[in-house]
Figure 1 (cartoon, rainbow, N blue to C red):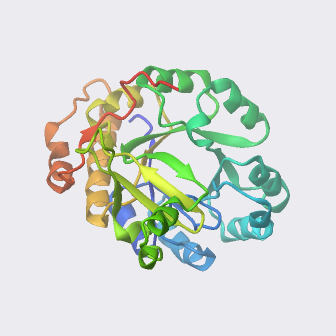
Figure 2 (cartoon, one colour):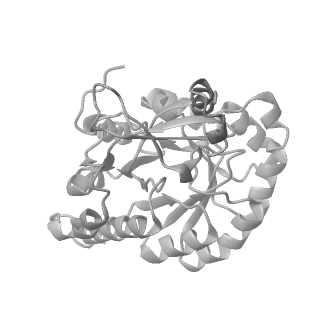
Length: 311
């Protein structure tokens, strides 16, 4: 049987960790907004510690997101935080700021480091630079096309490569509180305290009024997300053939039942390929549950896998 890639998803609670593992995930990313960006919920250290035994019971891995854009004041507790993550026994952290890497060398030298520089994770030479400094995994930019993704793994045979395969993507992040500023500008000060994920706000452009871009804000800034959901399940064989190491499902702004359905679908595809790579064929019925639960206002697309990105 062929080795299986990791099926990864971000969870926002211990309950979500358990349900996603039961659905077929083999790795979970957790964290809290002080250190990680765009998380579906807050998982402080005591919750992470409570989740670890559940993860181990499923033979899975647990990672922490430490991929924030760090200002000086945010560095104050970083050493202790990383030290605690290592004490708990998680399997690795996702980072983009070199300050995290340098702090981890001292505070948590046994933690695996997953380099994620968002949309600038676009070439193998830079990945090798960070590999020499301790990174064991590269998280690919969502803007790479299929050929570039496949080439990246070919150029990095001794480094793990992670790619997003499903869910919405972040298209804009500002440290400024743009939504609050806008609401004050239109004299709606009373609404500025309710601009988080639960509010379900959307940005609609005048030229593309049929597309709704989810937008939300937390204490660290404003985020605009894609108007559609990436789904590469139909062509997953190309990534499986390329021996990518980790397939990520983005859970943000999705109900748990939807995320569970997505995990089950990709689990079926991965398992079928591992059983018989040569005879593998995509089964259209794997998409049925996803399509049933898909938000009718959000299309499923191939993301940038078959687009030529313009910078």
